[in-house]
Picture 1 (cartoon, rainbow, N blue to C red):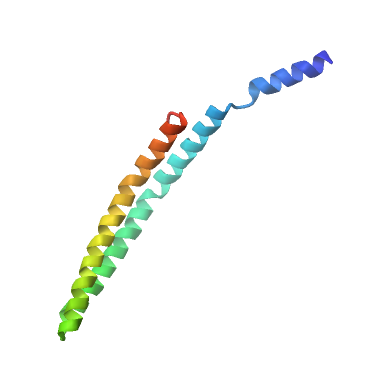
Picture 2: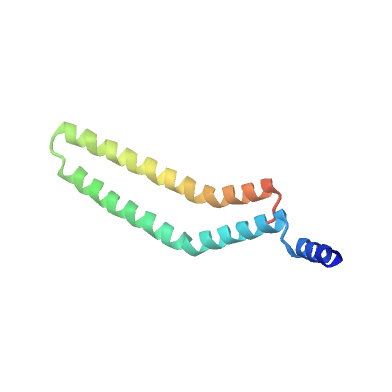
Length: 107
């Protein structure tokens, strides 16, 4: 009976606390974001370059007034998309840090 009590106390002393678990999760998330961040940025940059070239060609080939208006609308949508991607790219790490601070885990 006393031996079982020592086993339980030893197991309780070696099990990680909630704070340790959250800290390890935050650490893994930060490592994951850091490892894929360059590929995400390169992918988004490639999308912007290809879409920008497509819109530029579409503007150059626009002959009718309706096509020119449609092309200008595409340029406006391209700029809005770039701004949204920039905000998300800058906000994701801040969001992870904020959530870890809210959870009480030092990242």
